[in-house]
Length: 517
Ligand code: BG6
Image (cartoon, rainbow, N blue to C red):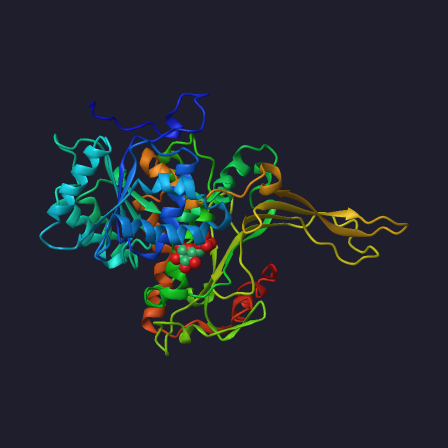
């Protein structure tokens, strides 16, 4: 069989080649396969790809973890979860077909002697399924195990292609990539000793969401928004990721991280980069990521003295979500009763460049908030001459553009319109676009798109090492401040509210207010 070459990325396809590129057959080896992520996200997303005929015929999954499943118990366990996750979209006949792609191998990649039985299993599966040696490793493990797992892959002789098994070797790593800047650098060093950067795919699942991918399309495929997308017209930007769920079964790992590491360092800063960056010169992975990097490097670093002014943290106490009583964070399973970990974070950043000087970007995310919504809100400046200011209906509101990322995927623009009648009365009205109405379906799962891209070797939607590091640089002043005094800037908010009142001050001291979600 011919040795496969690296497949083309979407950006390298000749014009008119169409958007759908099928990946080469590969074996996806998931370490930590008995965990929640595999069951709830990875396998249901792969199942969706299978049903859409986006997987190569030989594609297979090899789940690896210490739990003593065999192929059959692994398949049944996954089927049960997929049925639950997909609800009415679960199709038993397609599942039976898909289940033939799922295999399991018990054992521990962290074993210091390597994992020879894994190598044998991988080889035999590749032969059986005619996979030309392409291996995609997925580290669905606790972050402290990333570096040992990568060393384990190398020790097992699986990290580099050879004569017996040619093909590509890539590794997908779940966030968080490190715990702070120093830790992220050390991890990069360990990973790059085995996998060079072009073979490392760091997952930030927000980047796989259709509505997030649409940010660049909205900005750069349309002629009318970009001329307004700057300090001359925009007063400020608010980026919100509000969740109504708590920490669920993740108490232990979440408590070691907190909202700043869990959401701000990655998802929120990635959105900030997409909203603020300049147009890339092409859609190639590096051209897009170079622009994101440039933007993040232009974010004004917060000084240690200014850190307290620029960030507020919170932790939820008991409360009610949609009328139902929910416990406080400290009462959640595996959370220490005196925990000082934040479940809410809000921060203010400014970008020191020609386009954005003086425009604040306010970012916030929290758990157990009153509703679930992720959005980017662009607040425009008021009209320069306020001809209608004193009309019968009182003060006017400025234009607002909201890119709703989830759950009501869509975009709306608020503007003033004359309300019918003899008096001049300006009322805010909305122009709305809904993905579901326009395209007739809900967006596909983010993980599916990202797994497909990793199989194709397209890294556009994966944060590069330098981007991850600059994001940590932006967080480090806050982390240092909280390390010094772990209770600092931490305020309590009842579940079901919209975060601590102190977070309102971040905006109110500048004459602004958070949008009511
Ligand atoms: C993950 C965080 O990255 O994103 C979770 O670790 C959070 O804490 C989740 O719940 C939110 O993702 P989504 O897609 O449900 O908004």
